[in-house]
Image 1 (cartoon, rainbow, N blue to C red):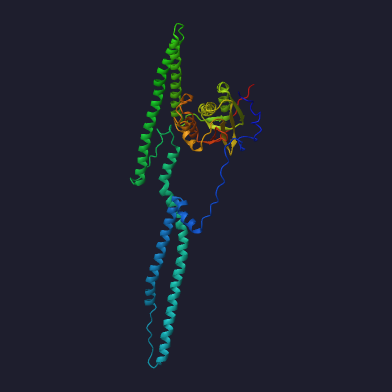
Image 2: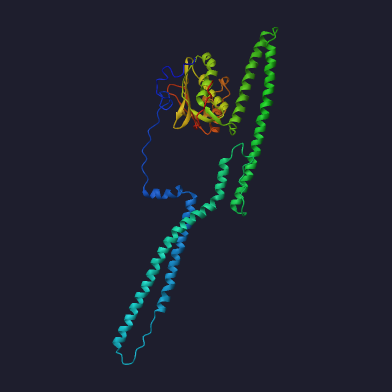
Length: 432
């Protein structure tokens, strides 16, 4: 049972979902404890951890320059002082008959003036030297920044290459650093060799997935055909029919398992298709496809969908939403509900699926996203699925650069929220 979009009590909860906090969005987050602000000493200790390596190198160069300049000034002061004392030393020669008292006065005056000249010259040397050191120090900071930038340029090139890498670009993206055979060149060559090995491993994985898709599907398809032919025989006994239907169910489960494994392997690779997609259309398609299953399980699907565009693979995104809705239907009680909504939140596309059902402990939420993991490690009701639904959802969301979170719903069930990067609006060609 599917209610009309935008109608019913679900529509009147909060306008417009999912920007407002719905009643079924799980318990509110705990209020954060007040954190005391760090003191001045702690801030100074944490300052080196916040600076980039470029600024650390710049400060190191500048500090070394200032220390060397200060040492040079001290050495010049020590060396110039005896030179001045020697150069200003005057031997007084006076004619005979001059009183000794006058000679002593002249000697004392000469000594005082020599001391004044020495002090003036050395003070001027220190003052002008410090000013020159300060001016050249500012220039040293700028030159140190340039030198640090040039020294880090190969590392920036490695970072840019690593950022551009994906599963489809490993074959032709390399650093290929040119220069002397130093530590940076050795690091770049090691990184290139690692990329070559990764490219070989990805190629082997792609070939394995492609071959497995044929080798595993073919015998199961043959088994299904043989069983269906045997069951269509009017002379088949009742025991044979029961056995055939049991084998058909097992065969169908194996087919679903293989499809899920292949889809999981495909989802964990880089996207080969990126185009504007409206998640509202994806959610509509998923709801329509699962409407009959919801009616058989006596589960009502309520939805409130608002336009939300993103960039990605429409087929994978449709499978992502379908898995969420299908899980909400499977792991639900009789006369239960599933809520689906979409919209734009903080510039990103959001799809949220919630369902009634058994209580989900908070500590079990993260584990159900692992392959072949079920709630409480349940293997009894394994016929409901292979345990790959949420694993595929997480792989698809990560391949699209988004995040998926789940919280227990008050009263039982789960609330799963998928957040994707926003994309250009999807334009639908008008019919004429």
